[in-house]
Amino acid sequence: MRRLAMWGTALAALGAVTVGGPAGAAVAVAGPGAGQVVREADLAYHGSAVLSRGRVRVELTPHNHGPAAVPEAAVRLRWSVPLADGGQRLPDGCVRTGARDVVCRTGALTAGEVGERIDLDLRLRGRPEEVRLQIGTVWRGGVPDHNRANDRYQVLVLDTGDAYPF
Image 1 (cartoon, rainbow, N blue to C red):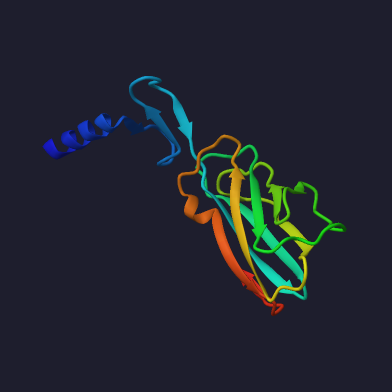
Image 2 (cartoon, rainbow, N blue to C red):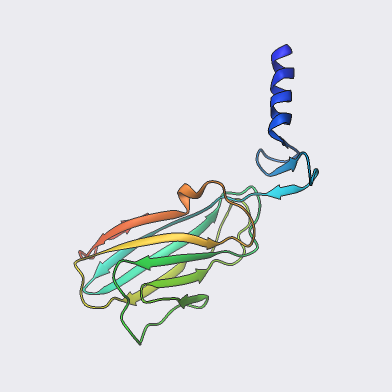
């Protein structure tokens, strides 16, 4: 019993105690701003990339492992070589933000749910034998995500026509 009391004192001294709901869903902050509730989500992306003769196809599905919902999020895809100029067709909700970058909105992501798949079919400048694709969340609608290991990826994609999963 004494150890339990010491553990409670230690948690209080750290300034955070979990309140209600699933673990990590909300945290009450002690001290200034006491009672403030902080929401947290856990975004992840799963999909594949294919490189063939200067074209790169990416299928990407956003996931929110929760516990909080995200009202809107955006994911950036960055290639190690520039995209071809002109004539690129981007799906609704995606915009080219640089020579090598495309940012796509995910829409609202309910906790524990899978979002809508994002499909890109783009031309790269030249015909590279390989390309490195970086994928990462750039905006989470103000909801923190402390597990950034599963929403940032680097994928080496070879010009084989094979799908490289992430």
